[in-house]
Length: 214
Image (cartoon, rainbow, N blue to C red; front, top):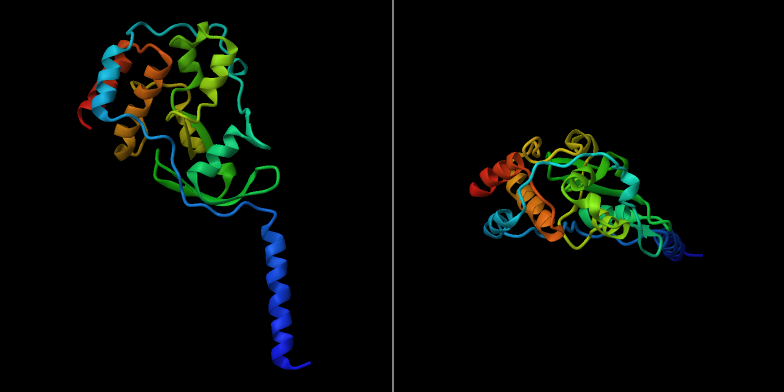
């Protein structure tokens, strides 16, 4: 066997092995993003139309009353869909778990290379929604809210930053990266308007201040 022929066989074998291995994963994709929030002017108009009332009680609240993460398609649940959507060059295994990729967190400007370092944030937290009117919803509507991919309600961010946010509203917490605060306020109002949730007076004042500067 000639050296050239042997090398060709070796290259062909290596290529076949690579194809077989890559078949276990989804193809890499460019970074997508959560649905675009309404403009600042529209957000200001929406904010003006929201019911303003004192925040309700957390009595009876449980995350279990907002079922998530539900299956979206095939083996993929909502968390896995958002990880794929918001990441760059994300590869998923046959169970839809992200096994590689990178994630940029707009809340703090950090980039992560392990899905375990990333949380999927509910823009309007579940407990905040409960205190703003979701306590009267059906479980089916709460499930839709907790898994909403059509509105700017879900976003992949740094886990400990998301944990520092907890269930706070914009009068109590804003993203540490100031360049993102306008987008955050627009998204918050967009979601509250879409679901008919109320705002308290301090929350409305904080949102007005941010939106007026957008």
